[in-house]
Image (tube, rainbow, N blue to C red):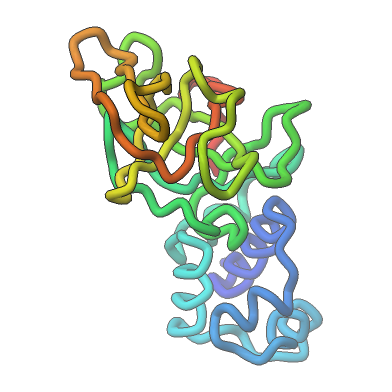
Length: 215
């Protein structure tokens, strides 16, 4: 019978390879000495206690069982992108620096899109039907940290209003400078008029849920 600790380590190796994570960075993020994972892989450190495994899993946005299960699957054939959160017609999403930390679930990066500065969000619910369905993945990048670039106007964007609400809407100029109309993708949903936006970024790619490879 294979030792669960060995399966945990094997699964952890695959996840780190998929996400491009460094041993020292993950060790420190999980509250351990920077050399812990390196020494563990070389057989110079004791197998992780449950509390240590839980800290590692928590940092990766996974359960210990999920990490163990990763030992039995193939390494993803390419780079991955962190999923920042979920979006509906309007939902609070923790977008700030999430993709830089690499926490949480990942999706295999589409060919040709690259991974630097790219954020992925998952659609939740049916509020954006028929354009986007629940489980679909949207990819975008922030051209500017603040403001609404001209190239975003007239297009579907992920955007944040002054109250901190994150939306997926078509962005159009409002009735006054600095204000914008947010047009719903679902004809049955309400539009929002003359709102101030902190930022807006055009959706660069949409993947239906049956094409997105989540890890």
